[in-house]
Length: 78
Ligand SMILES: [Zn+2]
Image (cartoon, rainbow, N blue to C red; front, side, top):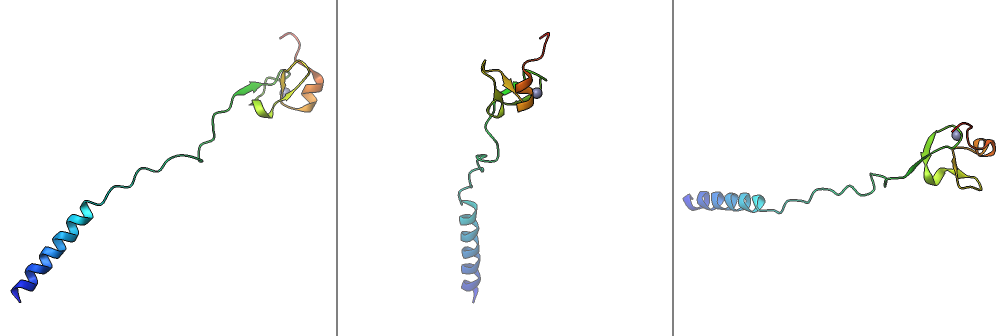
């Protein structure tokens, strides 16, 4: 019966070492959680900053935050 105890201790010790040597999981990659950086542009009429892709543009290519400001044109005295 003494050997059973020795074997049990050896098996437990073996499992313990096996657990210790398990490879560590790599850190999770932050892929889709962060949006890619966007270039911001200021509305030529009111100065509101908005993503360049959301900006409305006039014939001259100036960005505007809305259709109303695009129709109003750039602010005066700029
Ligand atoms: Zn505006």
